[in-house]
Image (cartoon, rainbow, N blue to C red; front, top):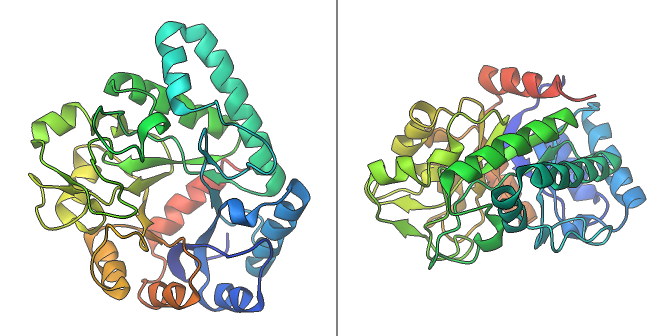
Length: 316
């Protein structure tokens, strides 16, 4: 494994690396790169792109991530349609017929894994473990398996296991729960007023003791735990994630360019790490912003090295 300098996950703008992006990757050595639809035209092109990224690091296992949930979050839409295969679809299958659910879900994950490995991606940022709550923002909506935390938790475990069988890492999100948000955290800061005892039995429950290698934070304020800070910037809530929810692996911030985070990007980066995030995610491809995050990110530490090495062991 090649030790990397910057504890960030970054993006590139197009379907192949530009000179300034190559220089950025060589200089700052981010922990990983995440791909979006704009990076993918077909399998051959995407495979060349991921190969060119890994060549810079001389690391065949270098982490390359993608949001490939199915349904409306389909970064492979130029290759295949998963429009009807939403989390909600699978949640309903689970409730009606467990055997039919497992057959359909296994086929879905096997096919997704095959495509991801075909283009050189080794981490998928799913499952979404947020609850589907009536009256909440549609940013989650049919991306949720159910409004029942036990069902979401069980499907989450199956999802993580099926992807691991296919040598793909997973990212549970948006820890400790985005379902109660009444506004979209891409644009506004959601504030949740529920008491902690309620949250532990409901929204937080699906995330408990999950075996995913990675988790992504929610840019949400839980008023009765920390009135000031979103989860990404809250020492109190990240301590809760570690102790009460029991997540022991790598914690990634949600995108630091999202409007839910107020203040300067430099401060938002520093405060994410101070609160306890292990990696900072940045997704808009703005080179100036990428450099701000890189210059304010700490060096990789022994915890990240250990956990990344554990992830590398499932890759084949």
